[in-house]
Image 1 (cartoon, rainbow, N blue to C red):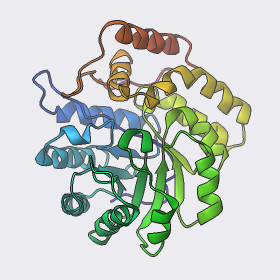
Image 2 (cartoon, rainbow, N blue to C red):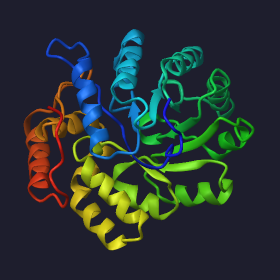
Image 3 (cartoon, rainbow, N blue to C red):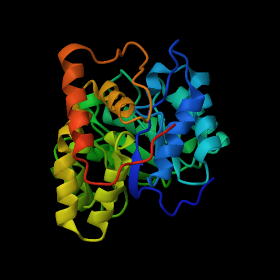
Image 4 (cartoon, rainbow, N blue to C red):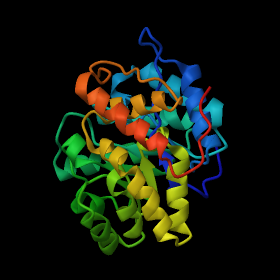
Length: 307
């Protein structure tokens, strides 16, 4: 395991899972993409999040991706895995397997498909936490998963010591202030929606879990570094350049858009696993034009690419 000093700080790309032409996982390409991100200065990595297509993978494939991540970059940066399962029992088992593999922390989602009561949601999170010794970040993304990690749930989880952080992806930035006002330093808060990331940092988020970082890591690292040193003008300059692409993270086709951006930037393949399909038609042309314009005008030196 890596040193945990940088856990929940800085820039954490929600890394993609790379696929071969036949639809199987390309572990070598996945490792190259992860290594390139670390080489470009990201603070940590989220494996098997939404962009990692967690729920499109078989159980053994998920563990193979985690092993590949640990093999490629374990010890260099903290590795966090998404825990996204249909049942609480499966989520707890996966958390235990991830800990054995050498993952450093967990990002736990509500149970998929089912919309729980507050008591059910708290029980789900508590059960997963009790199954592992790893630190846990809860993932709040009501637009994507139809579940809000509400304050009553967070109050119920106060005594659970290894639930320590929240990835906040609600589009209403008031939530950052409300979380910190209500809970103080009980939960570390990370910005989780790309197009309100700088607002989140300004309101007290400790770092940024990002989708578009997979295509433009140097700019993401430079943005957060500028903010951290108090150079708000530079942070705004990069953020304004980035914003057309960052809006893609808030769309339902974010995975396809991000992977297409990765391919254009030489960092991976746009291949996705059904039910997702690669972008087509006007949407594909629109995203290509946006990425090419961003590449033409990028405010940071050209990034290294995954060969």
